[in-house]
Length: 180
Length: 112
Picture 1 (cartoon, chains in turn green, brown):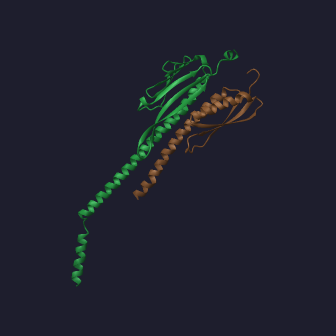
Picture 2 (tube, one colour):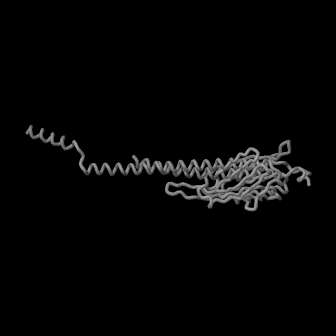
Picture 3 (cartoon, rainbow over the protein chains, first blue to last red):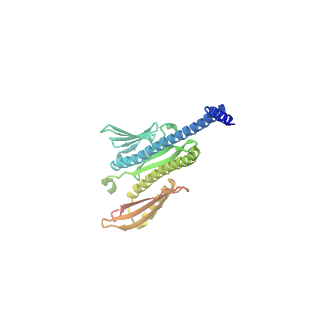
């Protein structure tokens, strides 16, 4: 009896030294599922991070453009502010020009040759973005009307949404003109 | 464990993206507020015509999907009238805090 018992034990030990094919298949499929889920979550997190970075860049551009634009308009007499026929170029005196082209708003200062670019429109799809300048000579209101396209990200899809943004500033007339 | 992580992470990412949309809306509202301030800076405070310009400002804010509340305060010794602005989003479901701003506009004089 004693001998039989020890024989059975050694048999069991020998049997446990390796995994069966079924166990291996279960392990491989579980590992594959976990890997796929983990990769998906990592990609989702990266996509969200990229979307947030683009978003912050847009907010920063919007605030900076608003500040620059209003400051420039305040420093230019109304009669020196002109918009071209396509409403895509705004000239503030001889020194500063704003243009809308290729999904970017560009500010160029002739004296210092500094070019600033503001990415508010969709750079990936400029056709879907739109922007124009306008000047109301009677009220002195100078405006940039933008149809900004931003990619709104959800966990399932990335869909572009357009938002109308208007930046306005009032150009002050010179004292002589006001008194007339 | 991974399932619980996914259950926790996906709502978190959704919250992050909705916060991004809120930030964009807030940045847009800030520009709407600055537009109103710009237009106010070109007006003079007097009881008769000020109401008309306020009505126009409220209408222009509505076209920008924002609700505008204006409160005129007391004037200071320099002849400037205190105006308190509150701009809130018009679209329902927006949880953005109202933008509050104080500006000063000159009182109308006989020369105006």
